[in-house]
Amino acid sequence: MKHLPKHLRPRWRYLAVALESWPDAEVGRRAFQRELWYAGQNLLGDPGSAAADLTVVRFAFADGTGHALVKVRRGETESARAALACIDEIDDSPVGIRVQGISGTIRAAEENYLGRGRQESEERNVVFGNEERVAVVRNGDGSADVRLPDESFAGATDLDYDLA
Image (tube, rainbow, N blue to C red; front, side, top):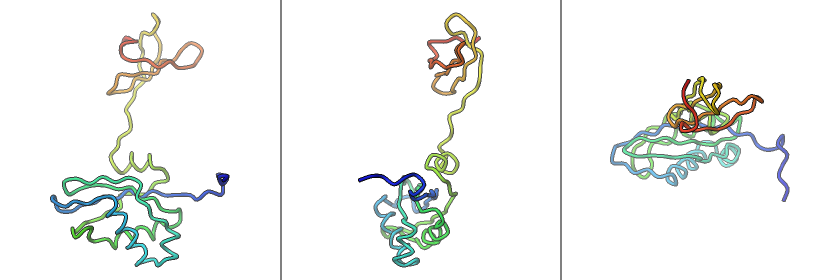
């Protein structure tokens, strides 16, 4: 079966959601997904719930706090926020839900709202191949992309270059 062309595929938005409950509460991804579907169906009805197509993409919960990433069709974000606001307990544990932000990609939602930071990098002069060159050095792992004379890059580790 052929895939739809890109301009005909559905567009998605990703809601970054923070969860909070009692420290001894155990909330699972399946239970959260089930409550989200029930809330969407009860609030929006069958057609509205199908139009929103609420799906949990990422989920983590431990020690009373957690986060989730909920995928929703573009144009249905307000309906999804309303459905999320209707959830007050999961598996008999009271839960507080807060939408931290909405994004167009999973990566942007994780970086901007769920605390998954970007990798820090800086441009430095390094000695590589017995010549001084400009490199983009990543903090933390010691890897670098060294600019070569032909304007291409070579990947290097901290064992391959020296700081100038």
